[in-house]
Length: 200
Image (tube, rainbow, N blue to C red; front, top):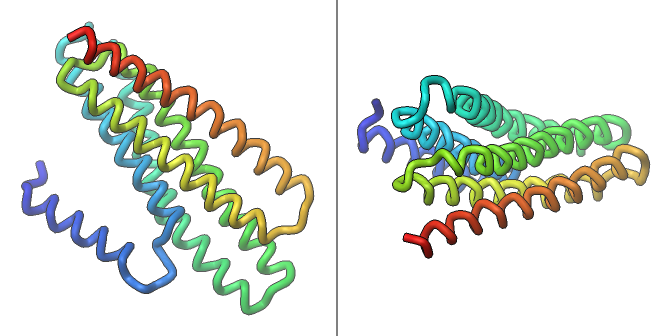
């Protein structure tokens, strides 16, 4: 188990990486990490709730949250690598830049999809959460919503650099759908928490 000192050092290192004047890591990686933290919170919520639930009742939810957390951590690194590739391709232009923008956009689309997945997992986990961790579910949903918004903005910035066509149209359509579903999911999670607080 990490000590408070270990946690402090890890946070300081992470913030320093984002504060550095280098082009990466930047917004896409930040979005991925935000959603990754949200998914990790859900792992905690499921682990605590499992102590008071039937054996195996929350295993599937916990595994899904773990999958999302690990995947989003990898996406943070992938986004930084993809954006570095875009910067390198800008010197060449043409097809090389188009390929790099496609790859970078695919990466932040994956961040958006996973962020929406975290919100959906919040909805599934919330009914089983212990009273002391219900606010953690709400925080997780809020972080994932911010990540979804950030990934969407980043994806649109990448898509703006590409010529109109099927790739751009599909990307915009999917982003609209993810934002609509994610927003509705957030509203439901926060609404349920507010009802709990008022009923207490």
